[in-house]
Amino acid sequence: MTEDAKKTLKTEPSLAEQVGVKAARKLKAQRNATPGVWSGLGLMGVVGWAVVVPTLLGAALGLWLDRRYPGGRTWTLALLMAGLTLGCLNAWHWVSKEDQAMREEQENGDE
Image (cartoon, rainbow, N blue to C red; front, side, top):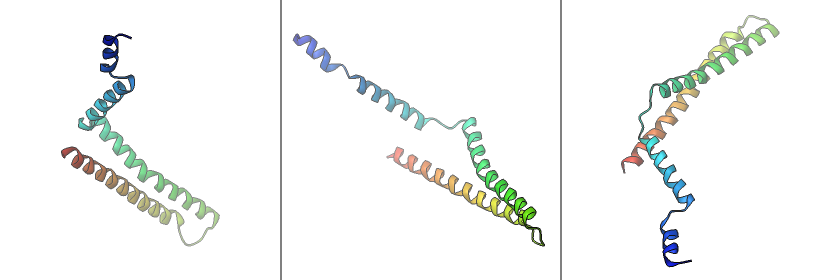
């Protein structure tokens, strides 16, 4: 190889370096982007399902227990409330974890 060819090969970034630069640029753009309406609706949907699923499972288990073991106690209402409580705690935990991650990302971005 000639000296000019060697210099050209050394100055051109490799494919891996080019991909790395593009990936870093995209990640930086995503971090700086403000969340849109669809992102907020998606978050509400996830939180809603985090509450609805345990509530419905508790109600279904309560209905099954009431049919299987009839008596003075109503399992449906008790397990419906337990499922609702569990779902709300689950949603609260998930939202607080996401909030903490956003705060940490904001603090790391400011430095």
